[in-house]
Length: 116
Length: 113
Image (cartoon, rainbow over all chains, first blue to last red; front, side, top):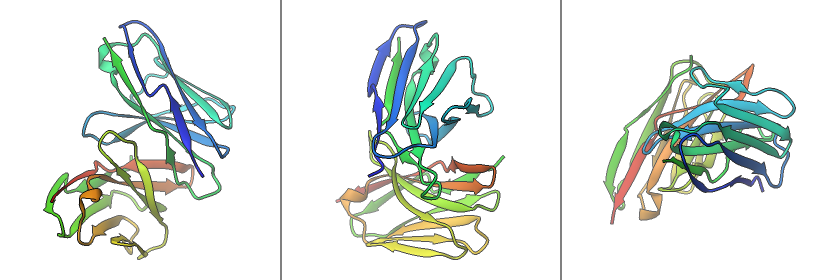
């Protein structure tokens, strides 16, 4: 149980284009989803917290107009990197919590974004 | 804001040796969680500690939560090559921050056969 999927697993795009990443909870309803980015050999940096049906809460320093988050249902959240640039290249990981098992987070497999 | 410090950053051990990573929070936590990330993979939940002074064991892994709920440790007895990876602690603040975790920097464990 508690499986989270992410799509795509990797993406390469040209500078200036937008990229959408999907995060789905497969066997539970995710009341809250989190989006992180991780640079090589570094820790996870929380970007934003999203709750179904409401606006995402962004961490300090994260541009909400650049990283658009939509939590359309209890099983799906999307992160759109708008007008991507090479410095946006990173490993993006989502996680989900059901809210019924404490605040244990279940992580998706991650999406590796490379912006040329 | 809340900060979670984790040491050491790297640990190289011979197979069979023990390993410990330590985590310290700047503020009192509601709970602490531990995750393992294999190279190229994503973090996988290991355990959650909630009570002051709590100790939990999973086979060769022993997890402790400090009395003040500000520090924690993960100890692996007799490491194996399958233990390689990065171990992260993550602190939960609870309250209005329910569900939100602050991750430590992680400890990269290398086990030499």
